[in-house]
Image 1 (spheres, rainbow, N blue to C red):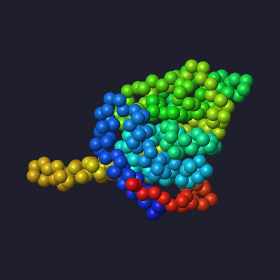
Image 2 (image 1 turned 90 degrees about the vertical axis):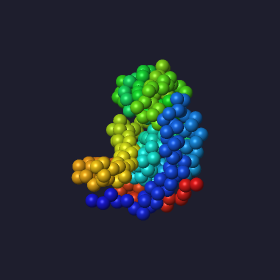
Image 3 (image 1 turned 30 degrees about the vertical axis):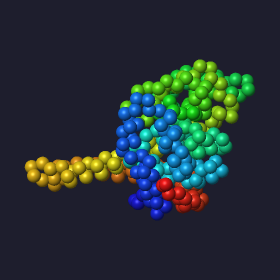
Length: 307
């Protein structure tokens, strides 16, 4: 079955790849990984404004919230290209947060601030926070949750909170929480522990339309898309190296064992990409999904090119 990529998707991929080559070359990634004080400053001051200007942060968001009017498939295309370039920072945590808000039916300033790059977001997929309802409809939250991807650079953190009536998801300002940076296996992207001590979350920040199933499904799609880009880079790099690395007077790519290894890598990467694309196309809320009345081509054509 064909992946269903349109000409528009391919143009989007080319545009994102061109942006990454210009704004995030390998030496930038290496500097981010090696920098002892890597954090919000380097990301927000260098990559975010450019990503926001190109409309990449808002690909999946509605027009009325400053978005491009596409859906998860287009965001998956962008994430695969950004993963291939190993772009550092909080892009993935931020678009996951904005996608979760849209899934919950939230519109307005919260979504716009993530779309225009003025705020970074993060989503906690871990348990640990508990909440007690207050008479005014707000929720008083305590506990600890983590690790949270991008938590130490986030301005807005979305997390599940256990209450007497079940789990409720809340959008919390990072300033109201205690954020502790943790060591991360991913040297290009920080993680953090989030702690709340009687933090008050107003009623309009409680995402009653959001469920853990919806959040984890979004996370699986978006994390998977980025991982596909990394896998594709690994396959390409390994196969190219096999052409120039010589052993016994021949390129190692001529040896059957090496050919088989590269072929298995390619097969696994293609299978992963197909699975992620299938999942992204099931997005019921995005205008680019099969469930949308206008189908996968209803969004505006990609309006920007890397500058």
